[in-house]
Length: 109
Length: 120
Image (cartoon, rainbow over all chains, first blue to last red; front, top):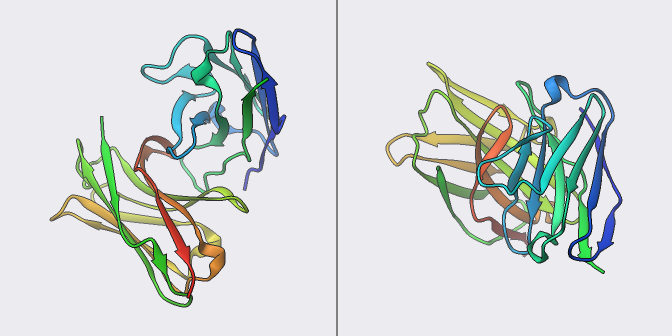
């Protein structure tokens, strides 16, 4: 089972700033099958990025994903007030189990 | 866009069976391209994938190893929905349970979530 470790646990930034979130895998993620989700209180996770770098439908271009192998990054270029939430990475593919990182909370400074 | 609507009780007694249902609109549970999953979220475990079912000329079922003896995910083609049953629950099974649709573990549609508390 692939273990995903996200850092930092909490990131305190101001609107307009750039956010960089990290996700490290315990072993290589095949075909870069790495997803990023955004979750707000009381809501289900929302798909942002799949295939490590492909934005999902309707996701603003201030969100970008990068990385390969075991190291992945989610970048939000200029934070908007609605971007403050918890972000999770997850690995997927043909064979479960599908595992999630523990999350990074992005909070307003 | 697939929409998922969950239903089921929010309180289950220890040792009993947790049962939830997820109604599908915008797709068919018998689709040859989708898979139907259950995921839970708790402060202690985070997000945890539980199991799935999908149809590719026949029905397939895959479960998390840690739950394999207690979990069943079942399709209901007559109602276009799928369900979760988790037997012999303990307080450790207290969580928000989500149904989710997606291919190969890429979850692009989620239900609204159901908080299930295991308590006497």
